Length: 229
Image 1 (cartoon, rainbow, N blue to C red):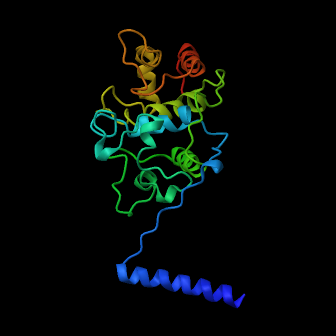
Image 2: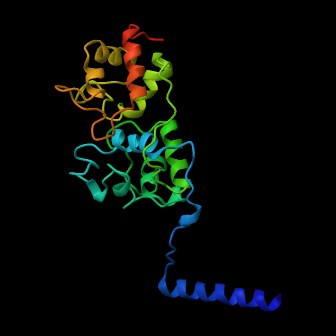
């Protein structure tokens, strides 16, 4: 036991000497082994994580495919994983640092827009912790009979839309409150956009089209009078 301890101490001392000579130590961040990247069964990359990036980050002039500011293209799983994500280690992931850990020297994101809400931050953290996996084509649980404004519509707007439509001066206006969402619904823009109809702007811009269930939720809400319920 003494021999092992003595050997370990000598190894640690050697590391210390090397660090002193080099004046600093650089350690690679922990990366979750491939066989442990199981993912969170309650998180779907396509419908839970990608919309966070598309709505809040992948905007023209920022991190879309054309602009890829600072080398970050946040429009697809492949491009997102090229830079800024350390599977299993949110604290070492620069993308996580930029949205959740101020004061690390990394530029705070989203730039010139509200920070991510607690739900989005929780999803992003859990996704990275469990391996940052691509779960394939899937959608979160959706109930088309849940079409109240507070229960179904507002969370959908917050998840897919308000990253871009966060003020009256934003292109397309605001979708942050009931009045603005109702206006978009009443004049037909909301349904036209999310159904990708001709003559409308396909939304979410740059992201996947909403599922048939989600579109049905909006249709039912509008048909019922777009109430603030």
